[in-house]
Image 1 (cartoon, rainbow, N blue to C red):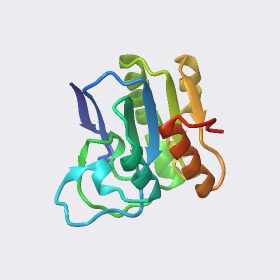
Image 2 (image 1 turned 90 degrees about the horizontal axis):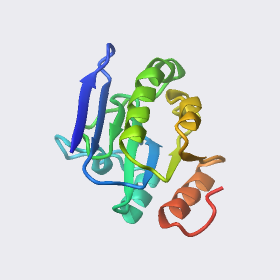
Image 3 (image 1 turned 45 degrees about the vertical axis):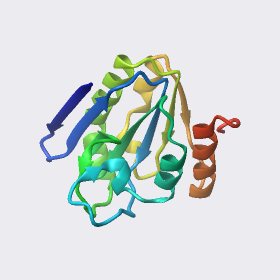
Amino acid sequence: MMVSDKLDSDGNGVAVETDRSSSRLLVISCSKRKRKGHETAPAIEVYDGPAYKILRKFNTPDLDVLIVSAKYGMIHSNYPIKYYDQRMTRAKADKMRSTNKRVLEKMIRENSYNEIYINLGKDYLPAISLDSLEILGTHVVIAEGPIGKRLQSLKNWLTHTSNVL
């Protein structure tokens, strides 16, 4: 298992954790809706928006999940977090982009992904650098459209049932 856990100058956490050989990577934003009642729990269990309900239902062993969090930066889905309430702003996204780029590139280099699926809303997309993904040579799919279309696309991608776009 590889773990990288550090804080940047703003106190944003960066954590990447892998313990299996995954063929797919999902990059998803955190969720405003969170489950309360946990002092600390894995991020995938704390976030409770519609995308996380789909993800928990259709998560597969060949999938790694990185979450872009307004508070913690880019974290692995198993990274332990506490309940918080913080929105992503354009300034915050711009500030964390270079750190997130390094984390994402490292994750891609250390794993042999067949495909990367990016499902980020307009506030979160600027927090990653899409240019670097093309250079790394992995097939990248970016979800587009309104939230309902992106949720259906996520479900399709997770279940391998049809074209994502």
